[in-house]
Length: 480
Image (cartoon, rainbow, N blue to C red):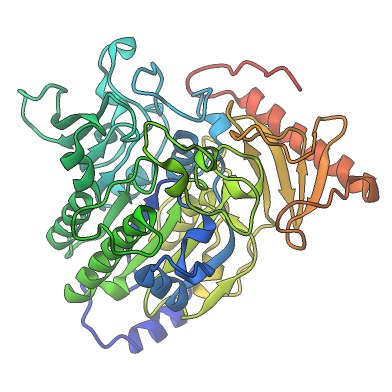
Protein backbone atom coordinates (compact mmCIF):
# COMPACT_ATOMS: atom_id res chain seq x y z
CA UNK A 1 0.00 0.00 0.00
CA UNK A 2 1.05 3.65 -0.48
CA UNK A 3 2.46 5.09 2.75
CA UNK A 4 0.85 8.00 4.65
CA UNK A 5 4.26 9.70 4.63
CA UNK A 6 4.38 9.59 0.81
CA UNK A 7 0.85 10.99 0.58
CA UNK A 8 1.71 13.82 2.98
CA UNK A 9 4.92 14.76 1.19
CA UNK A 10 3.17 14.80 -2.17
CA UNK A 11 0.40 17.02 -0.84
CA UNK A 12 2.92 19.39 0.70
CA UNK A 13 4.48 20.03 -2.70
CA UNK A 14 1.14 20.55 -4.47
CA UNK A 15 0.55 24.25 -5.02
CA UNK A 16 -2.63 23.98 -7.11
CA UNK A 17 -5.85 23.25 -5.27
CA UNK A 18 -7.01 19.78 -6.25
CA UNK A 19 -10.51 18.31 -6.15
CA UNK A 20 -8.99 15.66 -3.88
CA UNK A 21 -5.48 14.51 -2.87
CA UNK A 22 -3.35 13.28 -5.76
CA UNK A 23 -3.32 9.68 -4.55
CA UNK A 24 -6.99 9.53 -3.56
CA UNK A 25 -8.84 7.89 -6.44
CA UNK A 26 -6.73 9.54 -9.14
CA UNK A 27 -8.20 10.02 -12.58
CA UNK A 28 -6.89 7.67 -15.26
CA UNK A 29 -6.47 8.34 -18.96
CA UNK A 30 -5.17 5.64 -21.31
CA UNK A 31 -4.12 6.55 -24.84
CA UNK A 32 -3.92 3.36 -26.92
CA UNK A 33 -3.04 4.02 -30.55
CA UNK A 34 -3.17 1.53 -33.42
CA UNK A 35 -0.16 -0.12 -35.10
CA UNK A 36 2.43 2.41 -33.94
CA UNK A 37 5.94 1.03 -33.59
CA UNK A 38 8.66 1.68 -31.06
CA UNK A 39 10.61 3.76 -33.59
CA UNK A 40 7.78 6.11 -34.60
CA UNK A 41 8.59 8.60 -31.84
CA UNK A 42 10.79 11.61 -31.23
CA UNK A 43 11.78 10.40 -27.75
CA UNK A 44 12.92 7.05 -29.23
CA UNK A 45 15.17 8.73 -31.77
CA UNK A 46 13.06 9.15 -34.90
CA UNK A 47 14.78 12.04 -36.71
CA UNK A 48 11.83 13.30 -38.78
CA UNK A 49 8.59 12.46 -36.92
CA UNK A 50 7.80 15.18 -34.37
CA UNK A 51 5.95 14.03 -31.26
CA UNK A 52 6.84 16.70 -28.67
CA UNK A 53 3.86 16.14 -26.35
CA UNK A 54 4.49 12.41 -26.14
CA UNK A 55 8.19 13.17 -25.60
CA UNK A 56 7.19 15.52 -22.78
CA UNK A 57 5.32 12.70 -21.05
CA UNK A 58 8.27 10.33 -21.51
CA UNK A 59 10.78 12.89 -20.23
CA UNK A 60 8.68 14.19 -17.34
CA UNK A 61 7.22 10.83 -16.35
CA UNK A 62 8.21 7.15 -16.46
CA UNK A 63 9.44 5.76 -19.78
CA UNK A 64 9.50 1.95 -19.95
CA UNK A 65 12.11 0.94 -22.51
CA UNK A 66 11.05 -2.73 -22.48
CA UNK A 67 7.27 -2.58 -22.70
CA UNK A 68 5.11 -5.25 -24.34
CA UNK A 69 1.66 -6.20 -25.54
CA UNK A 70 0.48 -9.79 -25.24
CA UNK A 71 -0.42 -10.14 -28.91
CA UNK A 72 0.86 -8.54 -32.12
CA UNK A 73 -2.68 -7.79 -33.35
CA UNK A 74 -5.53 -5.61 -32.20
CA UNK A 75 -8.44 -7.55 -30.65
CA UNK A 76 -6.28 -9.88 -28.59
CA UNK A 77 -4.04 -7.02 -27.48
CA UNK A 78 -7.02 -4.88 -26.43
CA UNK A 79 -8.53 -7.77 -24.50
CA UNK A 80 -5.35 -8.07 -22.43
CA UNK A 81 -5.14 -4.34 -21.75
CA UNK A 82 -8.70 -4.21 -20.43
CA UNK A 83 -8.62 -7.45 -18.41
CA UNK A 84 -4.99 -8.08 -17.39
CA UNK A 85 -5.31 -11.58 -18.90
CA UNK A 86 -3.55 -13.41 -21.72
CA UNK A 87 -5.65 -13.57 -24.91
CA UNK A 88 -5.64 -17.36 -24.69
CA UNK A 89 -8.14 -16.95 -21.84
CA UNK A 90 -10.56 -14.93 -23.97
CA UNK A 91 -12.15 -17.83 -25.87
CA UNK A 92 -12.07 -15.72 -29.02
CA UNK A 93 -9.76 -18.19 -30.76
CA UNK A 94 -8.20 -15.53 -32.96
CA UNK A 95 -6.24 -12.33 -32.60
CA UNK A 96 -8.82 -10.33 -34.60
CA UNK A 97 -12.59 -10.20 -34.05
CA UNK A 98 -14.19 -9.23 -37.35
CA UNK A 99 -17.51 -7.40 -37.77
CA UNK A 100 -19.21 -10.73 -38.53
CA UNK A 101 -17.67 -12.71 -35.66
CA UNK A 102 -20.19 -14.42 -33.39
CA UNK A 103 -18.01 -14.18 -30.32
CA UNK A 104 -16.92 -11.05 -28.50
CA UNK A 105 -15.43 -10.17 -25.15
CA UNK A 106 -17.52 -12.27 -22.76
CA UNK A 107 -19.95 -10.51 -20.38
CA UNK A 108 -18.34 -12.33 -17.43
CA UNK A 109 -14.96 -10.73 -18.09
CA UNK A 110 -14.17 -7.88 -15.70
CA UNK A 111 -12.75 -4.91 -17.56
CA UNK A 112 -10.85 -1.92 -16.25
CA UNK A 113 -13.95 0.17 -16.85
CA UNK A 114 -16.10 -2.15 -14.73
CA UNK A 115 -13.55 -2.37 -11.93
CA UNK A 116 -13.17 1.42 -11.78
CA UNK A 117 -16.91 2.06 -12.15
CA UNK A 118 -17.45 -0.12 -9.05
CA UNK A 119 -15.35 2.47 -7.18
CA UNK A 120 -17.47 5.39 -8.33
CA UNK A 121 -15.49 6.37 -11.43
CA UNK A 122 -17.16 7.93 -14.45
CA UNK A 123 -16.04 5.90 -17.47
CA UNK A 124 -15.81 6.99 -21.08
CA UNK A 125 -14.38 5.42 -24.21
CA UNK A 126 -13.33 7.38 -27.26
CA UNK A 127 -12.06 5.32 -30.17
CA UNK A 128 -11.77 1.88 -31.69
CA UNK A 129 -13.39 -1.01 -29.81
CA UNK A 130 -12.67 -4.15 -31.91
CA UNK A 131 -13.84 -6.59 -29.26
CA UNK A 132 -17.16 -7.46 -30.84
CA UNK A 133 -19.92 -6.21 -33.13
CA UNK A 134 -23.69 -6.79 -33.26
CA UNK A 135 -24.39 -9.06 -36.22
CA UNK A 136 -26.68 -11.85 -37.39
CA UNK A 137 -24.44 -14.53 -35.88
CA UNK A 138 -24.96 -13.17 -32.35
CA UNK A 139 -28.56 -11.98 -32.90
CA UNK A 140 -27.45 -8.32 -32.99
CA UNK A 141 -26.41 -8.51 -29.34
CA UNK A 142 -25.29 -5.23 -27.79
CA UNK A 143 -23.37 -7.30 -25.22
CA UNK A 144 -20.72 -7.04 -27.91
CA UNK A 145 -20.17 -3.26 -27.42
CA UNK A 146 -18.57 -1.01 -24.76
CA UNK A 147 -21.66 0.00 -22.74
CA UNK A 148 -22.08 -3.67 -21.76
CA UNK A 149 -18.52 -3.72 -20.40
CA UNK A 150 -18.41 -0.83 -17.96
CA UNK A 151 -18.31 2.29 -20.11
CA UNK A 152 -20.87 5.02 -19.47
CA UNK A 153 -20.42 6.53 -22.92
CA UNK A 154 -18.63 5.79 -26.18
CA UNK A 155 -17.96 7.23 -29.57
CA UNK A 156 -15.83 5.20 -31.95
CA UNK A 157 -15.60 2.45 -34.53
CA UNK A 158 -16.73 -1.10 -33.89
CA UNK A 159 -13.70 -2.46 -35.80
CA UNK A 160 -10.69 -0.96 -37.57
CA UNK A 161 -11.74 1.71 -40.02
CA UNK A 162 -10.17 -0.15 -42.98
CA UNK A 163 -13.03 -2.69 -42.97
CA UNK A 164 -15.44 -1.76 -45.73
CA UNK A 165 -18.39 -2.29 -43.39
CA UNK A 166 -16.86 -0.55 -40.37
CA UNK A 167 -19.23 1.80 -38.54
CA UNK A 168 -18.74 4.96 -36.51
CA UNK A 169 -21.08 4.66 -33.54
CA UNK A 170 -22.01 6.80 -30.57
CA UNK A 171 -23.84 5.78 -27.42
CA UNK A 172 -27.35 7.19 -27.32
CA UNK A 173 -30.47 6.55 -25.20
CA UNK A 174 -32.81 6.78 -28.19
CA UNK A 175 -34.93 3.72 -28.92
CA UNK A 176 -34.98 4.83 -32.55
CA UNK A 177 -31.30 4.08 -33.07
CA UNK A 178 -30.48 1.31 -35.60
CA UNK A 179 -28.56 -0.57 -32.91
CA UNK A 180 -30.36 -0.17 -29.57
CA UNK A 181 -28.45 2.30 -27.44
CA UNK A 182 -26.11 3.40 -30.25
CA UNK A 183 -26.48 6.03 -32.94
CA UNK A 184 -24.79 5.30 -36.28
CA UNK A 185 -22.77 8.37 -37.30
CA UNK A 186 -21.16 6.85 -40.41
CA UNK A 187 -21.04 3.56 -42.32
CA UNK A 188 -18.66 1.92 -44.74
CA UNK A 189 -15.44 3.44 -43.50
CA UNK A 190 -12.93 4.27 -45.00
CA UNK A 191 -14.93 5.13 -48.12
CA UNK A 192 -16.46 7.97 -46.10
CA UNK A 193 -13.36 10.18 -46.27
CA UNK A 194 -14.70 13.11 -44.19
CA UNK A 195 -15.77 10.75 -41.38
CA UNK A 196 -12.44 8.91 -41.47
CA UNK A 197 -10.48 12.17 -41.39
CA UNK A 198 -12.55 13.36 -38.43
CA UNK A 199 -11.78 10.44 -36.11
CA UNK A 200 -8.72 11.76 -34.24
CA UNK A 201 -10.22 15.20 -33.67
CA UNK A 202 -13.67 13.80 -32.86
CA UNK A 203 -12.29 11.51 -30.15
CA UNK A 204 -10.16 14.29 -28.70
CA UNK A 205 -13.09 16.72 -28.52
CA UNK A 206 -15.30 14.09 -26.88
CA UNK A 207 -12.62 13.13 -24.35
CA UNK A 208 -12.04 16.77 -23.40
CA UNK A 209 -15.77 17.32 -22.94
CA UNK A 210 -15.93 14.19 -20.76
CA UNK A 211 -13.01 15.40 -18.61
CA UNK A 212 -14.56 18.82 -18.07
CA UNK A 213 -17.94 17.37 -17.11
CA UNK A 214 -16.43 14.87 -14.65
CA UNK A 215 -13.54 16.87 -13.15
CA UNK A 216 -15.13 16.96 -9.68
CA UNK A 217 -15.14 13.16 -9.36
CA UNK A 218 -12.79 10.37 -10.39
CA UNK A 219 -12.94 9.41 -14.06
CA UNK A 220 -11.45 6.88 -16.47
CA UNK A 221 -11.03 7.91 -20.11
CA UNK A 222 -9.94 5.26 -22.61
CA UNK A 223 -8.82 7.06 -25.79
CA UNK A 224 -8.21 4.37 -28.42
CA UNK A 225 -7.24 6.23 -31.58
CA UNK A 226 -7.74 4.45 -34.92
CA UNK A 227 -4.53 5.89 -36.35
CA UNK A 228 -1.87 5.22 -37.59
CA UNK A 229 -3.37 1.89 -38.68
CA UNK A 230 -3.67 1.78 -42.48
CA UNK A 231 -5.30 3.62 -44.20
CA UNK A 232 -4.00 6.86 -42.92
CA UNK A 233 -6.24 9.89 -42.47
CA UNK A 234 -5.41 13.37 -41.25
CA UNK A 235 -7.44 16.58 -41.30
CA UNK A 236 -6.51 19.42 -43.63
CA UNK A 237 -4.75 21.28 -40.81
CA UNK A 238 -2.11 18.54 -40.60
CA UNK A 239 -1.72 17.47 -44.22
CA UNK A 240 1.77 18.15 -45.54
CA UNK A 241 3.09 19.26 -42.16
CA UNK A 242 5.68 16.50 -41.68
CA UNK A 243 8.94 15.56 -43.37
CA UNK A 244 7.79 11.93 -43.12
CA UNK A 245 4.78 12.42 -45.38
CA UNK A 246 1.29 11.25 -44.45
CA UNK A 247 2.50 8.96 -41.65
CA UNK A 248 4.26 11.92 -40.06
CA UNK A 249 1.17 14.09 -40.56
CA UNK A 250 -0.96 11.50 -38.76
CA UNK A 251 1.53 11.19 -35.91
CA UNK A 252 1.62 14.98 -35.59
CA UNK A 253 -2.17 15.09 -35.25
CA UNK A 254 -2.09 12.28 -32.68
CA UNK A 255 0.58 14.11 -30.71
CA UNK A 256 -1.48 17.29 -30.83
CA UNK A 257 -4.43 15.31 -29.48
CA UNK A 258 -2.35 14.29 -26.48
CA UNK A 259 -1.21 17.89 -26.03
CA UNK A 260 -4.79 19.18 -26.05
CA UNK A 261 -5.83 16.68 -23.38
CA UNK A 262 -2.80 17.48 -21.20
CA UNK A 263 -3.56 21.19 -21.51
CA UNK A 264 -7.16 20.54 -20.47
CA UNK A 265 -5.93 18.81 -17.31
CA UNK A 266 -3.78 21.85 -16.55
CA UNK A 267 -6.58 24.31 -17.28
CA UNK A 268 -9.02 22.41 -15.06
CA UNK A 269 -6.49 22.14 -12.21
CA UNK A 270 -6.44 18.33 -12.14
CA UNK A 271 -3.14 17.44 -13.82
CA UNK A 272 -1.60 16.35 -10.50
CA UNK A 273 -4.64 14.21 -9.81
CA UNK A 274 -4.46 12.33 -13.13
CA UNK A 275 -2.35 9.39 -14.29
CA UNK A 276 -1.91 9.37 -18.07
CA UNK A 277 -0.71 6.20 -19.84
CA UNK A 278 0.40 6.05 -23.48
CA UNK A 279 0.98 2.91 -25.54
CA UNK A 280 0.15 1.12 -28.80
CA UNK A 281 -1.72 -2.11 -29.49
CA UNK A 282 1.17 -3.66 -31.47
CA UNK A 283 3.98 -2.82 -33.85
CA UNK A 284 3.71 -1.30 -37.35
CA UNK A 285 2.02 -3.20 -40.19
CA UNK A 286 5.23 -4.08 -41.99
CA UNK A 287 3.65 -6.60 -44.37
CA UNK A 288 2.76 -3.60 -46.55
CA UNK A 289 6.23 -2.07 -46.52
CA UNK A 290 7.06 -3.33 -50.01
CA UNK A 291 3.55 -3.06 -51.45
CA UNK A 292 3.45 -0.61 -54.35
CA UNK A 293 -0.32 -0.41 -54.52
CA UNK A 294 -2.99 -1.69 -52.14
CA UNK A 295 -6.45 -0.61 -51.09
CA UNK A 296 -4.62 1.69 -48.68
CA UNK A 297 -2.86 3.56 -51.50
CA UNK A 298 0.93 3.78 -51.52
CA UNK A 299 1.07 1.77 -48.32
CA UNK A 300 4.84 1.31 -48.38
CA UNK A 301 5.24 5.03 -47.68
CA UNK A 302 2.80 4.88 -44.77
CA UNK A 303 4.22 2.06 -42.65
CA UNK A 304 5.93 3.00 -39.41
CA UNK A 305 9.04 1.70 -37.69
CA UNK A 306 9.69 -1.05 -35.16
CA UNK A 307 13.35 -0.01 -35.08
CA UNK A 308 15.61 -1.28 -33.56
CA UNK A 309 13.59 -4.49 -33.40
CA UNK A 310 12.84 -7.10 -36.04
CA UNK A 311 9.58 -7.31 -38.01
CA UNK A 312 6.31 -5.74 -36.78
CA UNK A 313 2.58 -6.29 -36.44
CA UNK A 314 1.53 -9.92 -36.73
CA UNK A 315 4.94 -11.17 -35.63
CA UNK A 316 6.38 -13.03 -32.67
CA UNK A 317 9.65 -11.16 -33.20
CA UNK A 318 10.22 -8.21 -30.87
CA UNK A 319 8.92 -5.69 -33.42
CA UNK A 320 5.43 -7.18 -33.14
CA UNK A 321 5.12 -7.05 -29.35
CA UNK A 322 7.45 -4.33 -28.07
CA UNK A 323 5.86 -0.89 -28.08
CA UNK A 324 6.09 2.46 -26.26
CA UNK A 325 5.08 2.46 -22.59
CA UNK A 326 4.79 5.88 -20.93
CA UNK A 327 3.26 6.75 -17.53
CA UNK A 328 2.84 10.46 -16.78
CA UNK A 329 1.64 11.90 -13.47
CA UNK A 330 3.06 15.33 -12.53
CA UNK A 331 4.02 15.61 -8.87
CA UNK A 332 3.72 11.88 -8.28
CA UNK A 333 5.93 10.12 -10.84
CA UNK A 334 9.39 11.64 -10.70
CA UNK A 335 10.52 13.32 -13.92
CA UNK A 336 13.11 11.53 -16.05
CA UNK A 337 12.23 8.12 -14.65
CA UNK A 338 13.57 5.49 -17.03
CA UNK A 339 12.43 1.96 -16.25
CA UNK A 340 14.68 -0.55 -17.95
CA UNK A 341 12.96 -3.56 -16.41
CA UNK A 342 10.44 -5.29 -18.71
CA UNK A 343 6.71 -4.76 -18.21
CA UNK A 344 3.54 -5.13 -20.28
CA UNK A 345 0.00 -3.95 -20.78
CA UNK A 346 -1.07 -6.97 -18.72
CA UNK A 347 0.36 -5.12 -15.72
CA UNK A 348 -1.89 -2.07 -16.12
CA UNK A 349 -5.01 -3.67 -14.60
CA UNK A 350 -3.47 -4.81 -11.28
CA UNK A 351 -1.37 -1.63 -11.08
CA UNK A 352 -4.40 0.61 -11.43
CA UNK A 353 -6.27 -1.43 -8.83
CA UNK A 354 -3.40 -0.87 -6.40
CA UNK A 355 -3.19 2.86 -7.11
CA UNK A 356 -6.95 3.54 -7.06
CA UNK A 357 -7.80 1.29 -4.11
CA UNK A 358 -9.67 -1.23 -6.24
CA UNK A 359 -9.75 -5.00 -6.02
CA UNK A 360 -8.06 -7.46 -8.31
CA UNK A 361 -10.53 -10.29 -9.08
CA UNK A 362 -9.73 -13.50 -7.21
CA UNK A 363 -12.14 -15.80 -9.05
CA UNK A 364 -10.00 -15.92 -12.22
CA UNK A 365 -6.35 -15.80 -13.21
CA UNK A 366 -4.95 -12.29 -13.65
CA UNK A 367 -1.66 -12.54 -15.53
CA UNK A 368 -0.34 -9.04 -14.91
CA UNK A 369 1.67 -7.75 -11.94
CA UNK A 370 1.49 -4.63 -9.81
CA UNK A 371 4.26 -2.37 -11.16
CA UNK A 372 3.30 0.68 -9.08
CA UNK A 373 6.66 0.62 -7.21
CA UNK A 374 8.34 1.65 -10.48
CA UNK A 375 6.00 4.63 -10.66
CA UNK A 376 5.88 5.65 -7.00
CA UNK A 377 9.52 4.86 -6.11
CA UNK A 378 8.57 2.91 -2.99
CA UNK A 379 10.33 -0.08 -1.48
CA UNK A 380 7.83 -2.73 -2.48
CA UNK A 381 9.25 -5.50 -4.64
CA UNK A 382 7.86 -6.08 -8.12
CA UNK A 383 7.29 -9.78 -8.92
CA UNK A 384 9.71 -11.25 -11.47
CA UNK A 385 8.82 -10.82 -15.14
CA UNK A 386 7.90 -13.79 -17.28
CA UNK A 387 5.93 -13.19 -20.44
CA UNK A 388 4.21 -15.19 -23.17
CA UNK A 389 4.18 -14.00 -26.78
CA UNK A 390 0.95 -15.06 -28.49
CA UNK A 391 0.35 -15.53 -32.19
CA UNK A 392 -2.75 -15.66 -34.43
CA UNK A 393 -4.54 -18.46 -32.57
CA UNK A 394 -3.90 -16.74 -29.20
CA UNK A 395 -1.65 -19.63 -28.12
CA UNK A 396 1.88 -19.08 -26.79
CA UNK A 397 4.64 -19.16 -29.37
CA UNK A 398 7.50 -17.69 -27.36
CA UNK A 399 8.36 -16.89 -23.75
CA UNK A 400 10.62 -14.35 -22.10
CA UNK A 401 12.30 -14.82 -18.72
CA UNK A 402 14.75 -12.14 -17.60
CA UNK A 403 16.75 -11.09 -20.68
CA UNK A 404 16.14 -14.41 -22.45
CA UNK A 405 13.51 -15.16 -25.08
CA UNK A 406 12.69 -18.65 -26.36
CA UNK A 407 10.74 -19.23 -29.62
CA UNK A 408 9.04 -22.57 -30.30
CA UNK A 409 7.13 -21.15 -33.28
CA UNK A 410 7.90 -18.16 -35.49
CA UNK A 411 5.08 -16.05 -36.81
CA UNK A 412 5.29 -13.21 -39.31
CA UNK A 413 2.76 -11.73 -41.72
CA UNK A 414 5.61 -10.96 -44.10
CA UNK A 415 6.34 -14.67 -44.57
CA UNK A 416 9.99 -13.91 -43.86
CA UNK A 417 11.54 -16.02 -41.11
CA UNK A 418 14.95 -14.42 -41.66
CA UNK A 419 16.60 -17.79 -42.19
CA UNK A 420 15.40 -19.29 -38.90
CA UNK A 421 13.11 -22.16 -38.02
CA UNK A 422 11.70 -22.83 -34.57
CA UNK A 423 9.86 -25.87 -33.27
CA UNK A 424 9.15 -27.29 -29.84
CA UNK A 425 11.98 -29.79 -30.39
CA UNK A 426 14.41 -27.21 -31.78
CA UNK A 427 13.60 -23.82 -30.24
CA UNK A 428 15.48 -20.56 -30.72
CA UNK A 429 17.02 -18.68 -27.81
CA UNK A 430 18.00 -15.00 -27.86
CA UNK A 431 19.26 -12.56 -25.25
CA UNK A 432 17.02 -9.66 -26.26
CA UNK A 433 18.76 -7.16 -23.97
CA UNK A 434 22.10 -7.71 -25.71
CA UNK A 435 20.81 -8.74 -29.15
CA UNK A 436 17.95 -6.32 -29.89
CA UNK A 437 17.41 -7.62 -33.42
CA UNK A 438 17.32 -11.32 -32.44
CA UNK A 439 20.16 -12.36 -34.73
CA UNK A 440 22.29 -14.69 -32.57
CA UNK A 441 20.66 -17.98 -31.62
CA UNK A 442 22.16 -19.06 -28.28
CA UNK A 443 20.21 -22.30 -27.86
CA UNK A 444 23.23 -24.58 -28.28
CA UNK A 445 25.16 -22.63 -25.63
CA UNK A 446 22.45 -22.89 -22.97
CA UNK A 447 20.71 -26.29 -23.14
CA UNK A 448 19.58 -26.17 -19.50
CA UNK A 449 18.06 -22.72 -19.94
CA UNK A 450 16.34 -23.88 -23.12
CA UNK A 451 14.82 -26.84 -21.34
CA UNK A 452 13.60 -24.83 -18.33
CA UNK A 453 12.05 -22.13 -20.52
CA UNK A 454 10.45 -24.67 -22.84
CA UNK A 455 8.95 -26.41 -19.82
CA UNK A 456 7.62 -23.11 -18.49
CA UNK A 457 6.03 -22.21 -21.84
CA UNK A 458 4.35 -25.60 -22.23
CA UNK A 459 3.10 -25.50 -18.63
CA UNK A 460 1.61 -22.07 -19.21
CA UNK A 461 0.01 -23.25 -22.44
CA UNK A 462 -1.51 -26.25 -20.68
CA UNK A 463 -2.80 -24.01 -17.92
CA UNK A 464 -4.60 -21.88 -20.51
CA UNK A 465 -6.16 -25.01 -21.99
CA UNK A 466 -7.15 -26.44 -18.60
CA UNK A 467 -8.72 -23.22 -17.32
CA UNK A 468 -10.59 -22.73 -20.61
CA UNK A 469 -12.61 -19.52 -20.98
CA UNK A 470 -16.03 -18.17 -20.17
CA UNK A 471 -17.02 -19.31 -23.65
CA UNK A 472 -16.17 -22.91 -22.79
CA UNK A 473 -13.31 -25.35 -23.49
CA UNK A 474 -10.49 -24.35 -25.79
CA UNK A 475 -9.44 -26.86 -28.43
CA UNK A 476 -5.78 -27.80 -28.19
CA UNK A 477 -3.78 -26.69 -31.19
CA UNK A 478 -1.80 -29.09 -33.31
CA UNK A 479 1.86 -28.53 -32.54
CA UNK A 480 4.21 -27.43 -35.29
